[in-house]
Image (tube, rainbow, N blue to C red):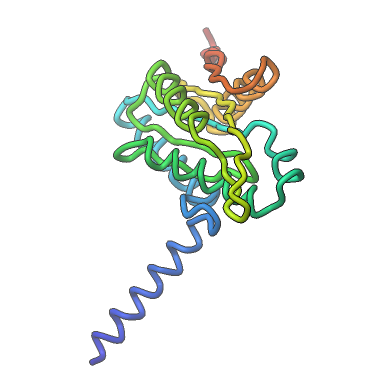
Length: 194
């Protein structure tokens, strides 16, 4: 009996842990889990000398969409994007809700060019979907994503990788949206004393 109570407690703890790591609306990883996994995967990539890539994705014109059609439709859009990301990645790839209308995908064992290719597939998958207002049945058109993609440089700080990916995302936004931009290569480290 005692062991079954312990088991139940263990299960509940596990559920609480999962809940605290999952975005309530979209049911994919939240920022907290993203941060933990990003750190873990980066260490793994450094030790195994395998590539690690990052995508940052932003829903184009989300605010006006939200303002025009209301939060319920906005929430529907966020869920749709999350589901598309989840369906579009494989294995240990981790899609996460990074904040607001921004998403991130961690791609272990993936080079920059493959990350860009996947980002394009995800972008097209989202653009192909028609948004329909569930309450009224009205067609509200399509949504698109802007994406920045980067591969972690050897010894690169995670904050720098995020910065580079974010700069690429910003370029995607400012050059017409609904596109994927590959990040600039990491800054070359000067070796001290050379």
